[in-house]
Image (cartoon, rainbow, N blue to C red):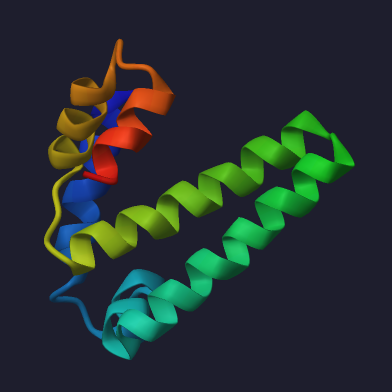
Length: 105
């Protein structure tokens, strides 16, 4: 899984320098943060609707869209996937309740 995310991260980074008319991702970058966040909001809602509908294939499809647009946001903000995986690693083995309590300190 990590390999596909790294490949995608590399492509998304390349799209930063592409012309907006040549690439959907370049267009999102060109439109800016608000447009990227709008897409993440739309995709989040579609995940919720798919989950309520219960069709696994639809859920998978919509989560993939959500992940994709989240990765676009990460590259827009120059955040690397490994920074996210490192944060998840820190939380591994830690109770969700404890992790949440740690955030409030």
